[in-house]
Length: 93
Picture 1 (cartoon, rainbow, N blue to C red):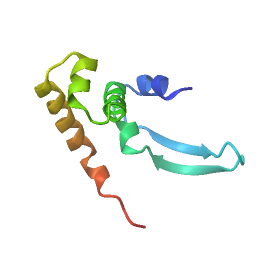
Picture 2 (picture 1 turned 90 degrees about the vertical axis):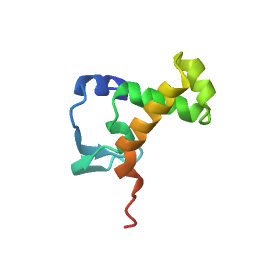
Picture 3 (picture 1 turned 120 degrees about the horizontal axis):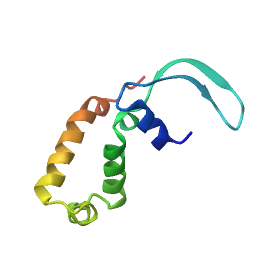
């Protein structure tokens, strides 16, 4: 199952991964793992972030790609930054 399908199935509900298998070695790890913050965004926001990175952060390019105004792009970036803010404090374990 691909990530887009999984994201649609979850319909925004919180997901927890309970088993991870390393494809090359076959090693499996079981437990309760939270998804990374970017993976917790809804599909539209994941596409937006990917487009932003692909366009090297060009707001002009984002305006062209999405057909919306500068304030709309900035507003969405601000909302995403607030949603991802906890993710910016990476533990140094």
